[in-house]
Image (cartoon, one colour):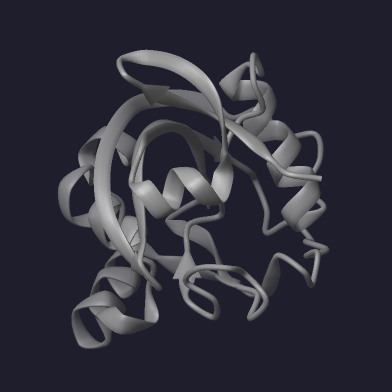
Length: 175
């Protein structure tokens, strides 16, 4: 079944096939979640079978909402689907827009609802191997250092989020 996502065509929000939106660089809706435990962020390494940016490190999870799906519901759904995480209450932090080449002739042009959730302990995750090949907890400073040293190991959107929107996502800087 073809996945349809909300995208703008001629200024009007319209359901568009996901791959087509990325091939043509259409501006479309997205959701990104950042899960924190103290100063540590849970990041994921995308599965090798993903159609773009396989094997690269990304934020906790991200996706496109279904047509008429509430962004917060989408964030909760994707935490469960990608990582097996339930009973988390993500809080809306902001909405950001970015455009990035993600390789293979594909472009992400996303209007992203950003969610932040915090947990009191490092929770167990059960990644879906079709989505996620690895997870780890990392401080923002260590993540920035990793991106500076080997940017090619990280998704374009994670690099953009940390470079341009960190204060809007995390509020007070964490170490």
